[in-house]
Image (cartoon, rainbow, N blue to C red; front, top):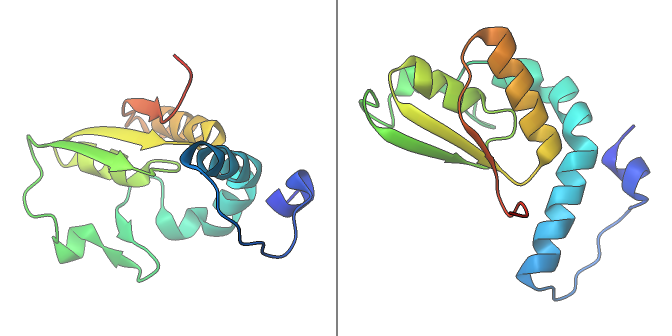
Length: 127
């Protein structure tokens, strides 16, 4: 089921919102769309890969980040965290952060299935 069907949203509305409302809306969208997004794009982004989307340029080829071994890296908006797992495989101390609990559940499952788990943090989670 798509996020539009789950949330009952269609079209675009523009209005001023504060940060808290924006965060709630983003979390609701990605929680509702995580399964569909990864079904559509999962093979493109990979499980343990760093792809500069939508260009499809792989960090392994481009080396835009330079040497990452031993570096502390925070991946913000990690989704299913393939980049963080790739960075960890290169020797970085990667941590993956996202608003969406649904995306982080995919990240945890992929960490377990690939054998490359990374610490996961949910942004804005109640403490």
